Image (tube, rainbow, N blue to C red; front, side, top):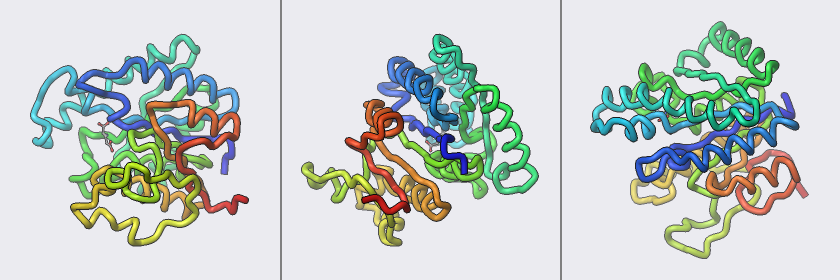
Length: 261
Ligand code: GLU
């Protein structure tokens, strides 16, 4: 395992707000990536293609082909914004789109690995998304389901030690924060139960609809494969920065199999 290789996943809700791409947030992300790159090899998994597409053309997202068209429109817009935000730091970026097949076949996975190694060796930032035009996670059987799971696979297959999820969910709470505003974030999670992983099956469970379950599934996959996951707010990047660069864990949840005293 490459100890200094990390994957950062950023969700649509962080990148696009009120039907506008949040440029300030992407600039902050670019700055964080530049600061991290002195210590880490960074791979970025970015959602937001469909949401960015919708800022340019309002197609009805409930229709699958429209959603795929929006991804095709939004993905290059997003890549342009990333390229511009990274330019002051002299970081070149590369677009990498995966479908379920790509990490499901030994040959294709090896091809992807070889490409990734060349990019990382040359200090290029790979920006990964699902290839939404041909596979749309939740509807196609070979899709990844969502980018939380895709980023967990990326972390495993490209041998990174940690996946950092930047989300509008700022940690894994002891209780549902929507029901108990005083609920506390669990700082360290070493095990996830089947019941927690299946919470999605309960439609009234706000935890599941809040998107925590896909994150727990990603974490479970990583724990099983000896890797770690850190879940924190994408609206305050200092939490992740402190954790990664200053070993300071103030907020956010670390999923780890390591026994920490
Ligand atoms: N690939 C989708 C997009 O970029 C997002 C999927 C997800 O957020 O899980 O719009």
